[in-house]
Length: 137
Image (cartoon, rainbow, N blue to C red):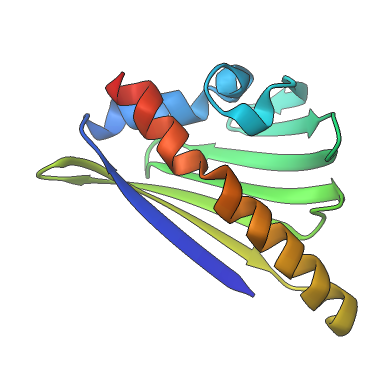
């Protein structure tokens, strides 16, 4: 199960990437992260994070500055098994930021139902728009 969305942000790729890579500040501009994301551990380019609130989850995030790529694998919570990948591409208009979500359920029927709920949440949240508004002001 897969969903992909992109947005063009009028700023250079380094600036857009650094805003997204600053995980500890997500709560400042993404409404669905109003509760702070807690960093449980940090090893070079890998973070283990936890989000509390109504929808709780834990994820491992790899931040690849060289390739302008971020990957988050949800390890616990209702989104367990969800893989999110952010790609940042320099284009003439600024930066094309793409966010894809992949979910492979362990139990097919229950997993499909869970995916429908997760997908609806992803569509409602629109974190790409939040990053655009933060960067462009």
